[in-house]
Length: 403
Image (cartoon, rainbow, N blue to C red; front, side):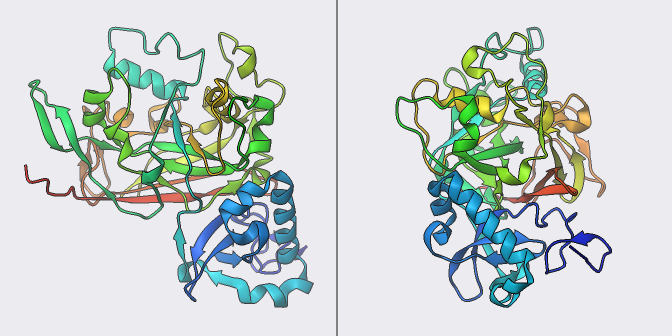
């Protein structure tokens, strides 16, 4: 180990401190268009994108996913060695690119997309909003991780503009309208990416989660609340969700999150045997931050999520449904018990009744054209916080539908 100029300990000959959120303990993967015009698999180290080659498992992130856990471990071990052993410096340095010199692309081919509804705080907040005279949670909520199948073809990489969608909605007078959503919302979520698929008809047990899932990324599951409310009964989300889902350009491998595993909240009633994840800590202590036009508006805690990622995958496959390389499943909105921990504007503004007061003097009940949303997160690591790649999105005006 050597001392970086900052005075912190670093094992990386680049001088990136171990305490850096994107230091040697992290090493997330992505796909980048390089200055020479090629698109390559890269690993982030500090403010650099390291081109790790284009052969075998490193041909793309899709290829690395499919290669399986042994290849994941071998790749990570090699990259750590390349970046910490001075003997490799001359070979590696020509393949290091400043982040501002590359353009990050969608990191993997999204095969299927499933979104869950697994935060008790979020589900209860939504229940109290739309069923004020009833129980906040539906009778099934504490028995299974509720989810829906989304649209993989509209998953976009961070920094892609999100166009305001149009659809049907019902106004306060009960009239059915068609036009751009008036209640565009954000949802701060954590996503998990399947590396190794499963066979049709064979469920994936909670104990097999780490054999199938490569890593995690942040997700903004944009939502058109007025369209969603009108179409939701009886079959659930459709056009109110399918127009865009933003993901980070970086996928953090589970190997970087070893210090972040934690016990989930106590579940009552006890989960059925196929959802029993008590054999090892199955929750993840990830702290999210939500910024609107640069202003911090919320800090949702993923550690309080009622259903864990392993339970989500087990439930997704318990009926025999298979998963494929590149399948993405997301946690649903991450919300905590406190108002400054809510992960959506629906909750933060009480469905628009109490708009947020922003530092620039503007108020927001829901998102306006031109608004910029940024999700970021970090998790416990061996020397500091492990950063998850941020998700940026800017709202573009709706198309003119000639109404």
